[in-house]
Length: 190
Image (cartoon, rainbow, N blue to C red; front, top):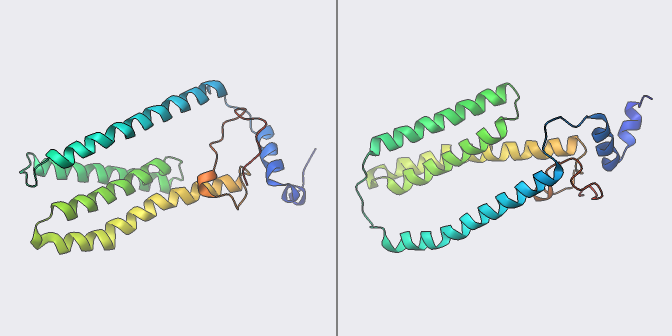
């Protein structure tokens, strides 16, 4: 049986998704849907517990940390941070150039590191360096971070729409993680 382009175009998003799932074989070696669901629940609980533990720790730091502190290893800290940022930006460029899925995590990590860099540059700068830190943050670091974080998010949504997982009206926060056979009776979100 052969489907024409017109017949495929006439399919609903749910029918396209069903067709894709039928045509693409399930890879060997993947954990079962039950195992994936159990891991997801445990990781979610762990992340929630970490977030809850961070609340009293943050309050403790706000109350006990001194307003002024001379840091050890100041140069090593900043140079090490910049080497980490350089590494993630390089990996992002390579993954983007080669059109590899690895661009998603490397771009987001690079964007977050740029936001952290801007934050710490501004908050740790001397009065004489504050304007340079602000200009660098506003003109370079924050815009690049938004591109690096927003780009992969838009691309993930595009791929979900393109491969029939969701409709073009689906909000980003409603995008499902595709796990074959996990919820066979659930409808595709619209």
